[in-house]
Image (cartoon, rainbow, N blue to C red; front, side, top):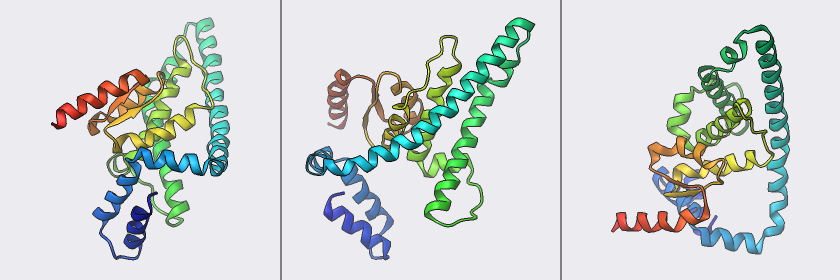
Length: 217
């Protein structure tokens, strides 16, 4: 973070700044790509732990989704041989949506117990959506994207999907978010209420910026 913004957050932690001031400081650094790129240029050696931090859970998550995909294929093969529809019922869009909310709640309570205190009550998915939009967008984007593992033409999960979903946590806080061609539609579905423009290609970014500037003018 920029030093002045970090100082504001520190003041907020000791009760010397308001929540509004702390949020503004956080967003000021978050929305300053020039500062972030300067940090990357000067401190790129410090990114190695971050890369390891994202890749480690990505591997285990990909394994879990691969297991789900294999289970679906096995049940689907049995349906074909028996003329049944167990797979369609088991992996229905309604069930997938409920699993997504359950996952959001589990991840959120784990984060809360890690960073706040153990033994906290379950946090309802609706409250997370409302009060923690970054966490909500991250988890829901990833889970929605992996619906593709049981599509008629399935797409296997990739290790890069998890870091891409982590990046999506920024989307509710910015005017324009750049995602890759696969993940962008899933991010877009999660941030429509924030009026965030999601660009799926680099060529879309400049027109999106120009459009925003015209609207602001």
